[in-house]
Structure formats: C-alpha cells, structure tokens
Image (cartoon, rainbow, N blue to C red; front, side, top):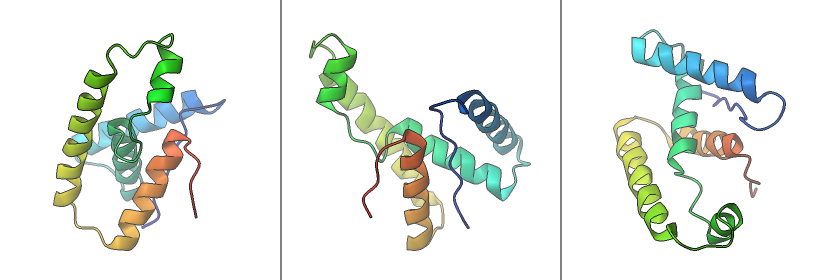
Length: 115
C-alpha cells in the first residue's frame, strides 16, 4: 500500500480540497477505494495534528505574540492526537505501512521530513 498525500497548500489546494472531500464522502458511504481510504486516513492524521506537536513559536506568530489560549490549544491538540491514536490502534497495519502513513500525513502538513 502506498499512501497518497494531497497538499492543501499552494495552487493545487482547491483541487486537493475537492479530492479529499470526495474521498471522505466515499469512506462514510462505504464505497471508498483503497486510494480514497488512504487519502482520508492521511487527512485525519494531519488534521488531528498527530505528527505535528503544538508550536509556541507558530502560536505567537499567529496570535500577535500573545500566549493567551496556548495552553487550551495544547490540551485540544493532545485530545485530537489521542483520538487518532485510538483509531490507529484498531487498524491492522504493519510497521512499513505506519511509516508510509506518517510520511503522507507529514507531507499533507508540508512539514520538512528527516530521512
């Protein structure tokens, strides 16, 4: 299984958003292809922030250098990460599959990867 990633950043973002939405609709309807399931699962990992810990630097840049609310944001992100972890534990996937998922989710977030 090769995980698919769709970047929501850049000129392809509208196309990616449409494709991700279509993938989720088919997953929920029970008629998703393997590729659509991969897209939805990588999207869920990215949206839950499972592979991206909260960043104080990013928070300050986005909130006029105010730390107010960062603690609540961290708790919320931890909860989302735990939700994703619970779902991930129910999915049968080997280590290689988990690594491909991690790379796809990180690529979805446009985070530089270490090799």
